Structure formats: C-alpha cells, structure tokens
Amino acid sequence: MDRPTTMRHELVRARAPLRLGFGGGGTDVAPYRDEHGGVVLNAAIDLFAHVTIQARKDDQVRLVAADGEIDWQVGAVAPLPTDEPLRLLKGVYNRFMADHAGGRAIPLTLITSADCPPGSGLGSSSALVVAMVEAMRRFMGLEMDAQAVAALAFDIERRELALAGGAQDQYAAAFGGLNLMRFSAGQRVEVEPVEVPARVMKELEASLVLYFTGVSRESAAIIDEQTANMRSHEARSMESLHALKAGAFEMRDALVAGDLARFGALLDSGWSSKKQTAHNISSPQIDKVYEAAKSFGVFGGKVSGAGGGGFMMFLVDPTRREGLKRLLATFGGAAQAARFTPTGAESWDVR
Image (cartoon, rainbow, N blue to C red; front, side, top):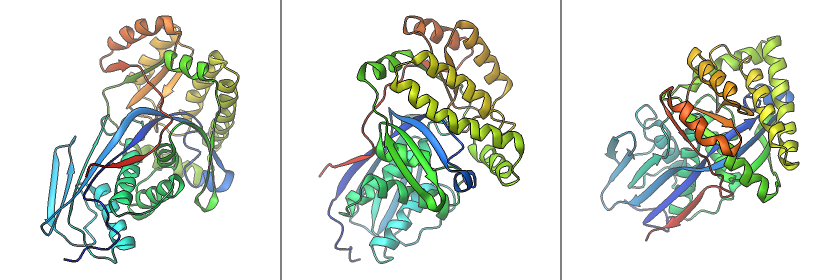
C-alpha cells in the first residue's frame, strides 16, 4: 500500500493537559453560546492525555486504550466503523485519512492513556482528542496552530461523532495556561490569556485541593437536560447560566487583583448557580462532602465539569490544606494538590 507523501515520521508522541473549569461552565454549550455568547474561565493543569503513534510495516490498524485495557485491530481500511469500542480513536483516524490521505488507510498503531479516570470532570475525553489530533498532525507532517488543533478536535468530537458537550475542553487542552474564553455563533472562539502575577498563581496552587469522589459519571445526560432547558428557555436554568457567565468575568478580575478569598466566594456562588441548570448535577453524597468542607472553612468550591461525580475542587488557606485532605479522605475517594501548566498540546519525535 502506498503511503501519502505527507507522512514524515515513524514514531511520535503527544500530550495535552486536562483543565479545571472555574467559571462559566455550561455557557459554552449550544444553543446558549449561539444565542447569548458563552464565557468560560479555566486553567490547564499538570495532568495529561497521552498519545503514541507508530507506523506499521504490515497492513493493519491497531488502536489501544492502554488505561482501559482495550486493544482493537483490523486490516487497514478507511473509514473505520465509528461504533464502540474506541470511538474517539476511530473518529480521529478517519478524519485524517479523509482530509490528508486521499481516503486511503495508513497502517499504524495508536495508543492512548490519561492521567485520570474517564468521567473525571477534568475534560479528559476532549484532551485525548486534542492530543490525538496533535499526534496525527506531526505523524503526517502537517502544520496546524493551537486554534486549528482545537477547532478540528471540536469538529470531530461534537459534529462528526455527535458527542454532547461544550467547547471549552478542546481549547483549554490545545492552548494551556489560564484563559478567559468567549464562544459565539458559528463556532467562533476567542482565547484571551489572563495575566495574573506569578505570586498569585503560586498562592492559588497552594490553596487548591482536588478531591476525586470515586464516582465516574457520564456527562451526556446532564448536558442533554441543560440543552433542553436552554432550548425551552426555562427561566431558572437561563438565569443561572447568565449568572455563571457574569461570574467568569468576576473570577478573572478577582485573580488579577490577587483577591483569592473573593475568588473562592465566587466559586461557591457559581456552584449554587450551576446546580440550577440540571437536576442531577449534584447528589446527596456530593452535597454531604461539600457541606463538610464548608464547615471546615474552605473559601469555596465546586464540582469540576458537568457534575454528577468526578472531581471536586476546593480553595482553602494553604496552612489548612492537609487538614482538609484528611477530612475529605474520611468520605472515601482521594484528595490531592493541583499544579497549573502554561503549555498546551505538544508533540515530539521519538524517531
């Protein structure tokens, strides 16, 4: 089988960071973003989605989710069927074969993993798509900037594979750093880096605690309910989304001013608004953990992502962080620190 002349590399790796969504989550989902304009404040963290692509000498395509212990192989054909398992991997492979290989199939092995479980609320699925796009870009010798990588990842995941969700995760993974993102009709996205003094970012890192509830959740049902409420213009949901969008600007301003107590209070009020957008965003267990953390004295917190499980985040005085981690451990799950990363998706040659 002839390979397209665009392929330049035999073995490449790529990674893309996961993210913490601070404010505005949900306003990046259609139809809200199209009708009102969405605004999200998020930051990339040093947990990653990882991808390896290696050319093969035989006529096979092998796709592997190493963390899920799923290994799928077939004779090289394009397009691959986009059913489960490994739907995301198949979708990315198909798009690059269609756009850059004339519809022919390139024999390769594609291996993926992530530094957190699926359903974490840290945007791992979209970060994985971004990392695969970045890896395929390098593997095939293509030039794409962060905006193009994010837009293509969004198109594959949301339009071609029709997976429910917004757009912030792809752009956070592609760009990295702390950003205020604006979303509007026509899939227009503006990524505005937020300039915060280094000492403030270090203090924010020192104050953050991530807590994995031990419950991985499927975000699609939550997002479907939010979308239905947007389309019907359900009053409580729409008011909450407007408040979430306004809160994203306020959070940015609090960080720029170095006012972390205010930032924590805005996390808290944002979580209250978020719970009004769909009925299953929280749960009795999440509420129990959150109230215990509030009683302990956190400045604020929220569930990361769509809700229903995954990771919670809390902001607390750094001198009390270990005490909070011990408290959270009494509920099961696991608590950990978080560090930010300024770097988005990146790839490199192994040989």
